Image 1 (cartoon, rainbow, N blue to C red):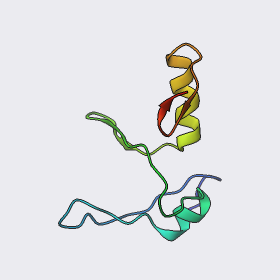
Image 2: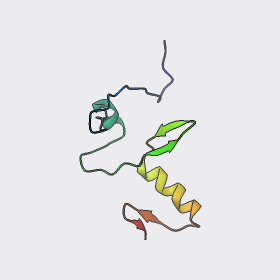
Image 3: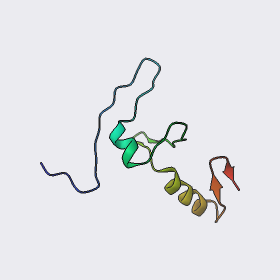
Length: 75
């Protein structure tokens, strides 16, 4: 089966503490480094998403009327 370009799927196991490891290939593709903050979005009907933080901050700025955001919040 041919995968669509730029589309990926991985499986992870949730440990006893509710933690999971992001696969190395995913960390490399999305440049996720130790200490990075990730945003976890959830929808009971559609599932869980972890969008790139930079993309999410752009959406937050639009939602909040052009206010700029960084890891700490509004700037």
